[in-house]
Image (cartoon, rainbow, N blue to C red; front, side, top):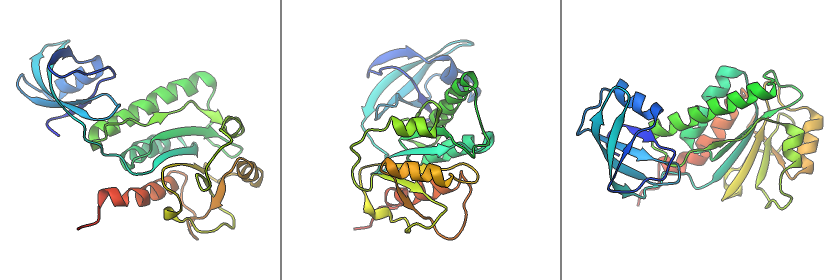
Length: 247
């Protein structure tokens, strides 16, 4: 990587000159970049482009796009995490850290014990905000694929929309009841985790999730916060990527 990283939501082509969108342009101005400074651009579709600042104006920043690097920094599991939303600040932090650790999709949910309950208009604004949090986290951590934050749904509605053909072990729910310990090596590839809000899911909600193919698993004797449990699982899944085996 070279220079500050900026997410550009558009196709990028080597050997072209482009103007940065308003958000990245403001960021470049805050960083006091100057013509000739190197920057890195990515559009969320994989890989990144080395670029160079050509012009810094009050309202416009132009860069020259140079070479493309197909580097990937994803973890081996494509993880979808559906979470009963914790309160505002904790949800922001969860999205930021889950992005750093490699989550591919985030599904905010409302359930019986949810403290954070959003009316439709506010829910739309929150999703836009959370998607921006994921983008900023990718800019910071070096990921070139931006996780998708899905629209807020009620748990029952989300479960009802799931495909029926899930592979064994591809759906797991973190349970606060009697359940076998989570085994990180039991499934590779795409996997969907479901975890509850403060207080967890009710017994009826967990039963409903099992009907849609979710296997209850336990993270041990401690009761982790709603925003801590997902990060523990993602950290374990990411260990092999952060610390690859030595030859």
